Image (cartoon, rainbow, N blue to C red; front, side, top):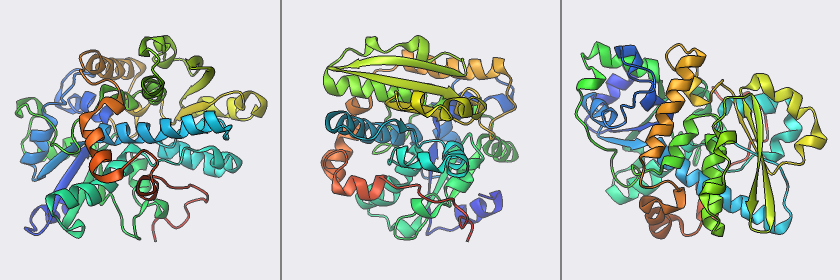
Length: 365
């Protein structure tokens, strides 16, 4: 989203500006202002965005929570019914594009749930709009993302609802920092506060989506919770390692759930080319950028040291969290009770799921 279009929307009294903030942004936004990588400004970001003219500010991690609830339900169904494996995560648009162009035969293995950004965007223009009695067409939904490719994802035809965009614009971490500086805002001087309710409370598992291995750890936590297995059985040494390729086995009741984590597309092809090995896994997480979203192309310039510091910042948020499993999130529970019904219900499938079956040549039409 170009800053001039954002400012135009801000000056239109009919429009309700709503922002969502990705997990990785909170541990990197301080860097353009001279603060240490990994320092969390989670409590400051809502006030900063409201000073810029946004009326509501939500946490993309809530969208991650909902995506995990949907995805783990799909995992359980496939385990019980002998479904197709492995499931490949769909939260990274770089990975989706890479598979479309280089491994189209694997597109049928993609998780059908939309990315956290798109899940939350749909809920903003349906559930939130309905609750707040706001016309969806009067909502300008802006996503603050660590990733330039999210701009293209927002335009994909498969992710529109009734032909309409759910995300009206994407600002990267650096673009937001530039706008804040132009407005004279220092992130550290903004007031402490939380994200807005309905779509603002998120588990720390959802916030781990910003790090390589975080999608897998979040999914395994929720799977463990659903089947009554202690979360401590998850191998964090594997989920939080910085190695390019790592694997782990999780005992899911009578089943052994095998997970493969690929950190950066540079490490993907050797694994994807070995189909016999690939078919041994139940879940495969592939993140385009080194370190995961903390190393996204919309972030401040990264080194391995800064990536590790940003990841450590997310791990500290997780260590101090009260809600660590998506299904435990009271706002997620309320969403299903009041709006969606059950995970993978007809309504959930219509709103939150999609299919990536073709190369996106018409995204910009």
